[in-house]
Length: 160
Image 1 (cartoon, rainbow, N blue to C red):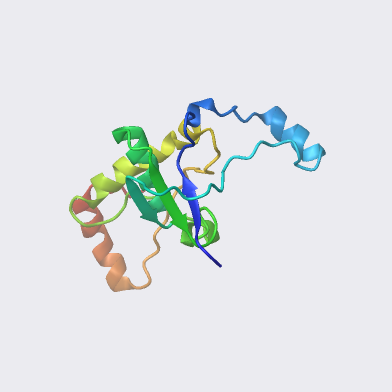
Image 2: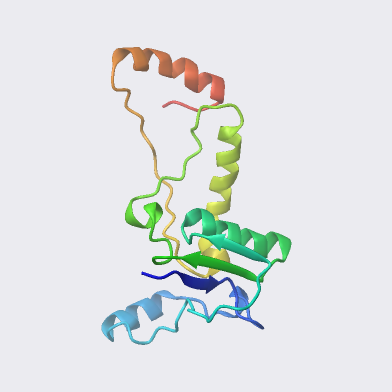
């Protein structure tokens, strides 16, 4: 399977120009065979030159392209993918976005990342299916169970 090229925006348009999704559209299109949707993604011909080329349209690649465009105004971006959008590990499995990593600095980094996810569907006008849930860690043995309180206390992770 050859690589496909995906551009973050087409010339003269932006995410803001997209029509919003609504519960009514979902309902109506569900009754009519899903034929009334506008195409959300394009499959453009490659340009001769890009400011940034990102290999991989998984969560990391797409997030990098999105935040380069949103925060730095870089929109001449190519995302090259051999499969489909988000079809890697995140697309095949249930992705867990969490902030309970126990190395210094990681919790704060992932806590910030989690905040970015909270409004992403609204920013993109696309359901990224982000839903916050609890995460329970079950220690496999007594030794790990005894060490867990000290580890979590030092990282600012709450236990309930």
